[in-house]
Amino acid sequence: MPSNAWERESHFSRKAAYTERLLAAGRSAFRRADAPAVTRLLRRAVELLPADDPLRLEAMTDIASALTQRGELAAAEKVLRAALDEALRSGNDLVEARARLA
Image (cartoon, one colour):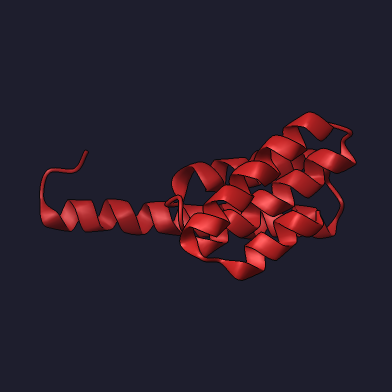
């Protein structure tokens, strides 16, 4: 972990930029219907985002959709349940609705 405030800020800025690139690449893969890439890229982004971040919750519903496309229904259900639980905890009505409809 970086030792001084400037290094920590730089570290977090790089992490945020990396996460944004993962999300953008995951969305692009989703538009191309590349389910394996969606799953891989968005899972990495989800790991980096805070639990209550709306982008994380939206990415989780996209992961569930990609898993469903791949026929991994049990895994998709697990991701959707986690997204729904977190959406309910954080009061994110949009993600709650997406998770319920998926």
